[in-house]
Image (tube, rainbow, N blue to C red; front, side):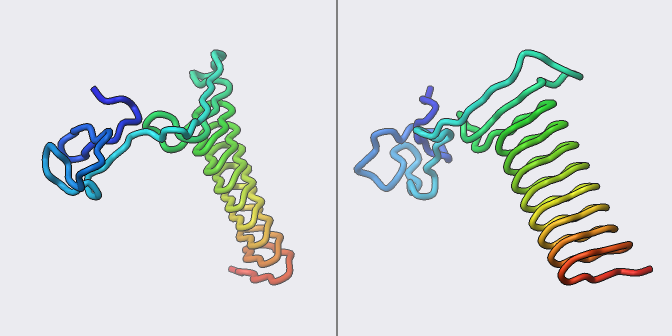
Length: 162
């Protein structure tokens, strides 16, 4: 039984804790640089929280940020989800997916982020029916550089007419 943050050989599962004199796994003989694995991130502490209150079977609030155990990124799912890869009605985080999505890379009905996709999207790059941002693509778009089907306002506008 290995400790959670203990390094081990990917090939045979042998514990490599304290190994200093060898460049090979003592059990299977494979080079350490090819087989060294550590499932967790010692010293790096993520945060996890989930409310007891539920709505439609989902927690009302779910927060998962940073590494925890064997998980490299937080993956919260809830009505309000906050974290690295959130999914929820309201999703806030790095790569957010939800009805209302706010973050770096977002997809949702209403989406705000560096890269935003949705029915109504606002961000550095945005795409949607209604889009606004530095580079906006949509039926109706507003921004620095715009590609629009029906109407567009901005510094450089390209209108796709049918």
